[in-house]
Amino acid sequence: MFGGNTDIGIDLGTANILVYVKGKGIVLNEPSVVAVEKASNKILAVGAEARDMLGRTPQGIVAVRPLKEGVIANYTITQKMLEYIVNKVAGKSFFFKPRVMTCIPVHITSVEKRAVLEATIQAGVSKTYLIEEPLAAALGAGLDIMVPSGKMVVDIGGGTTDIAILSLGGVVDSDSVRIGGDKFDESIVRYVKKEYNILIGDTTGEAIKKTIGNVHPGEEIKSMNVRGRDGINGLPSTVTVTSEDVRKALEEPLETLIGRIRSVLEKCPPELSADIVDKYLSYRRWSVTGWLGKSTGRGYGDSCDCSGESIGLCGHRYRKGAG
Ligand SMILES: Nc1ncnc2c1ncn2[C@@H]1O[C@H](COP(=O)(O)OP(=O)(O)OP(=O)(O)O)[C@@H](O)[C@H]1O
Ligand SMILES: [Mg+2]
Image (cartoon, rainbow, N blue to C red; front, side):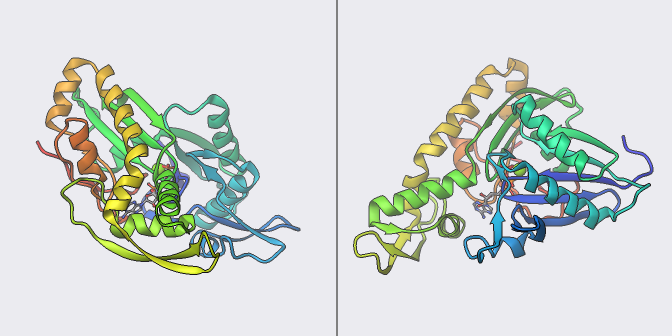
């Protein structure tokens, strides 16, 4: 599709940004956080360095996550972040501007799409293209989507979960739910407060999810000590949280996800449905995939390890489910 210029693929995620340069592979895989000097609007740091500043910045510096629920929440900072990324990976040149393909969730509004296009153009690129995330994920995972056979992709990101059934190179049916890892973290924070009267932050909620989180009954129950602020006396306190707690905390958001996956399956043409019974693809590094698989009647899926050794835009590798 692209010609001689530098061709860049950007996964502008709510939680992480991945940048792919044709011929070089993934050159950037960083949290989508930007630290900006308020007075000059100058970018001080992008990625892990900026993430470490979240909630810890002095007056005059602000660290923000410019995307929320899969879409641009702070246009100016997103645009500056894209400019920084494009300059970093393609260099600043008046004549040779790169072409960029950015992935977007399915079912975003035309205004939200326009914002991604405009922000990318203003970042100093010659041409910009958009691709729906499940399509990019399937290509990145090396799935042959051009064949007349149904493939289902469930991509649980930080802000959104994209559900799609693909066949013959296109999206046959899809849905995008504004529930993802961020909502899971918030649910864990709320649960710990309700159950133990301890206040923890989203980062701790995420750490609990990643360290001991599993949602499939029958998985190993793990536990970890969590520090936070006692809701009664306001002093630092420690509690032990278990995988069982995580399951209960995530019941509600996951039930919603299951419902939405089911309705995509219900709308799916019967022939493609039959294909998906045999083969399916699901995402995420933890046992949520197995549970989703079981709850939607698809059997168990193996999750990808997301090690970044990818061959495509989204940077995920995968192992195929049964069949
Ligand atoms: N081992 C793990 N177990 C559970 N969740 C994980 C694990 N590792 C990462 N996550 C979660 O995955 C989410 C980030 O996923 P990803 O990088 O695909 O999101 P994104 O593409 O930036 O977001 P979106 O596509 O919604 O815009 C975060 O919420 C993070 O907490
Ligand atoms: Mg994503």
